[in-house]
Length: 449
Image 1 (cartoon, rainbow, N blue to C red):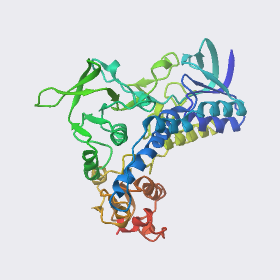
Image 2 (image 1 turned 90 degrees about the horizontal axis):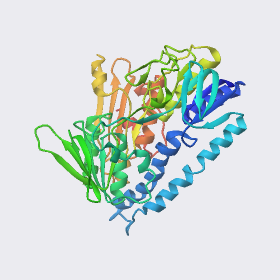
Image 3 (image 1 turned 120 degrees about the vertical axis):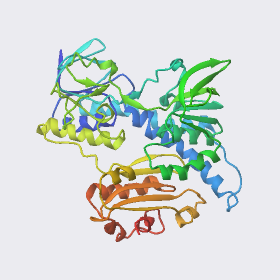
Image 4 (image 1 turned 45 degrees about the horizontal axis):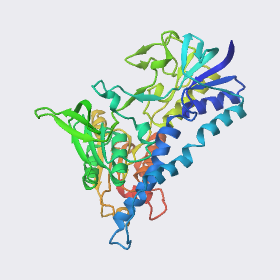
């Protein structure tokens, strides 16, 4: 039986960071993944998505600048755009395998499961470890509806070789918003069926309201308060049924239906009970150090841990905390202050820190700087009609409690506010900072005035 200091289940961001750190300390390590090495972000998530958005950005820029000095029309060639994406994603598994080989890490393919508190079985092999890190990522939450097997995943959408004419997205969060913009600009008829009463519930409602006309302008049909009840075949296509309180059955025809209703930790295949790893409501029970409360040999990081926002920087941060605890003893805790999040619609919408509702519940003397500002230079030079901000500031301390942006450069400028929140910079600190001009960041001072 092979023995290791650490076995890592998964090969995404959290796994890569943890492996590098403990291997540098001389630990023996094995990595197991039943999918190609590289993880969700690099292969099936944020990175390939942004590669596709690059094509969308070119289309959007040309349309906005039409009649402003730019002539002619552009269109997305979907197969070529997918081929461009693959120039990034295709080499990753081999690169990861090569890196593990260089580090002296045993990299194994197969479905891992616990066979004891310190024992993992994969493809008929039994492995033992002093410690085990669960970094298996997330998987779509079950919809629990008839016809669920007819519903595709976001992973599959990112591999489409041809774009279907009619697409229905179940859910109204990040994935639905981003994919709907991309698909609509590529020529598809898109419908979003969102159970909640508004799109993008993790973002400020005022800013979502300013962004919503972009969905309308793209011809995206948005049905909120609509709970999908079943999916069925209809001729050569599909029919999605939903219900809304007080209304008759809502049905939408589609050639592709995509699950965009959220993900949860991917733990099903691990047989956690055999490993004496406590789980409640589908989530690992961890202490403040990301260690299992029932089996101190086991840690978790990233989406599998589910402690912080489900974002790549959080996975990396978790892995650093776990590695430090493995090497130094369990004394380190994750710190999720100031983690920005972005939905890569066009234009993007971004947030960091507290929402206005949460800030008001905190009982502080709150100053809110909020405005829709499409007349500012940053928006005018791009002929972008959507631009706005909401800043939440503690009147007593001048600390920034939350920042919410929509419009050009929001995905970059939000990092300035993330830095301020994480490191205790005040609104005065940012106002006194000299940013390159004219840039998106040079608007920060005006937002805080």
